[in-house]
Length: 253
Image (cartoon, rainbow, N blue to C red; front, side, top):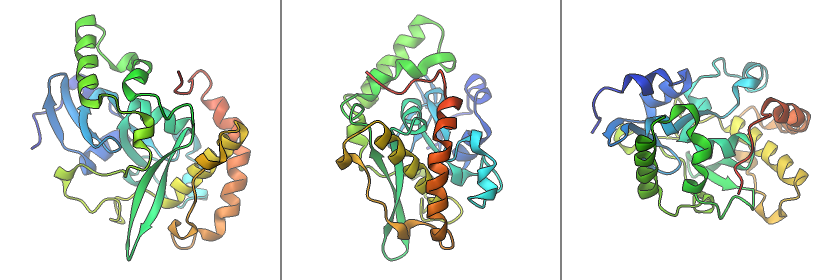
């Protein structure tokens, strides 16, 4: 059941993409630390201000959404996922990817794949302080309450525990996610990001067994022939992506 009206402070920090995702894929519930929304990766409601509306194709690359991937709005609900901030950071740093997989006959699923071997044993809770920043309470008592809540909700969950889990919409929304063609993430964007992750993995010499196996049939019809173009782009933009993200460290020990 949806909770009360969102708090003004939490709502004011919501990005257009996050707002779009909340309207279609998450209910809002009242919690001890304020409004809570659904994290589509951990499959639970968490405080609104620690859940991010993460762009699957980064906003920094918004020229590619039209020219290469064929959609007009970078804040399209199909170009985002609601996830805990620390998971979003790992996605943005190419330490994990979301892989589209066919579910015969006509459905498909989005599966989390963690590539960085140093990340797999790290708990979500231990990484959370990196995410507090401006969006979290400035007062120590509220901060302690938030930490206690997240510790209770997430427990000892590691990034490795997320490996192989499916990205889902809030069950309260009763959507056919991700198979609904109006809601499901763009498979071609997820494929591109996965290629970028594989480039990163090879550059950092992560174990080959941690690389995903990609199913070419998961790409939207009409885009399969662009795979080589995407792969070339993924190599070409790797340096620029790193430059854009300067000052934002990977999730690490």
